[in-house]
Length: 194
Image (cartoon, rainbow, N blue to C red; front, side, top):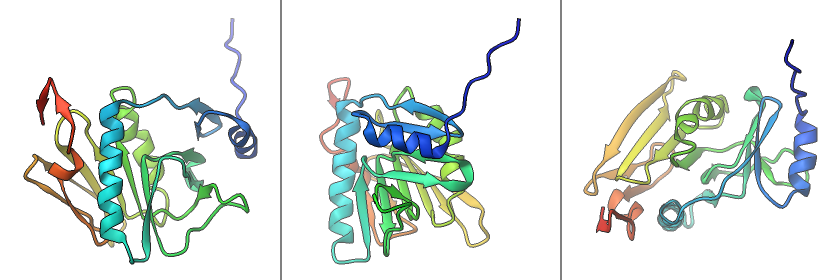
């Protein structure tokens, strides 16, 4: 008995379905995946980061966009919804709907237990195929720990870890420095502050 092959969606089919849906889905190489909800700590981290980024970038040519902006990686045939995407200069959109960003400068994902393997592996590799992307940042929910991937002038990606509430995340692609204590403000682990 042979398996029935899955029918792959075209990018146009995905966009038509996604734009009419009441829930968000991501698209990877012909397959569509519904997005799950997030936890309170996940949302606090996004809110804290966005607030800090807004303050750092105010009056500068870069903007931080939260959660609802699709980002396309054309070479990877994927559309994702980063937790935060930073765009510098004029945003480039896929079409007149302006709901798909083509030129992110930095992408930030807050890790969830159900998605962290993909965020560190397949999703990271897909985003890193975007020519404009200079930085990919992964933020842990359960401890003050940030993985930072920076594109070097030779095109290679360099990883570093920033850990501990006394540490500071220094962005390579934008004029921003954010203390991890600010990123994790208000988050408790096992009824104790981080």
